[in-house]
Image 1 (cartoon, rainbow, N blue to C red):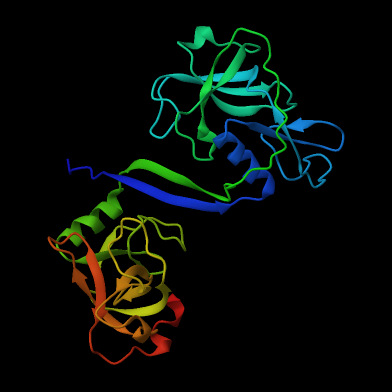
Image 2: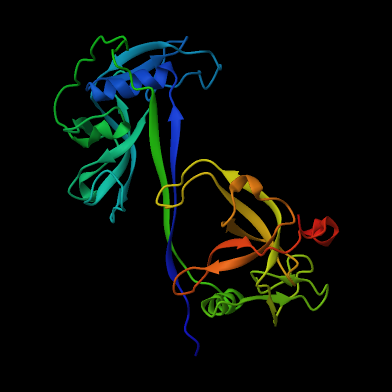
Length: 313
């Protein structure tokens, strides 16, 4: 039986966002161990605060402090914490309505087990030792026995406001290609590019997918393409990607390999970024040890005629 290919992959994007006055005050308050809500026109207090009333769409700005104690309104037990979650031991996800608030805040509860958690239990904030102006400044909630804490009187005015946050989004998974892509990857290891031809429309797709995306029929006929190709369209990248050791600006292009009916992605090198153009003829420069082309460089041939690749744009 042929070896089943698989590889760990990570999709990661640090999402950066600016904060309006309400969210800015809320996160700054957490840094200062103050929990703020926003009061609506009909007297409700929303925690976490929002900038617009979800019922009336009214602009909200009246910030009020609520207590660091509250009541669990619902919960779910997490028996196996994942990377990046607030606690590294089993915990409960909880919705907590803080004393003085009319809505519930989602966070985690540090409890010895699911038998120790119930709807209606009383909890209080456990503050993080180091705080920076993020929801994780609340390290977690913990069980609490005692009277409700008295809310403070903070009005949400701070010096040195938190004005933006970076929320890392990340997906870790294991990818296992099917028959068609396994053949493609094995060919790349030999510094070849292969596609598969549709038995109906006769188009050659690279990388192969095991089925024709146009006709919907299975593809099995393997066809070697390239190695040279034509730039059909491209973009100039001016923002440096995390963990990518390539100086900006650089060019990322769609490249139609000779004999293929679908353009694939590739970086263009060996030429100033402002000289890359549609129709440029290129060839692969392989990464050390093979595996995949590191980039494509000009072949020195005359540019391809637009009519030869216009259907691949």
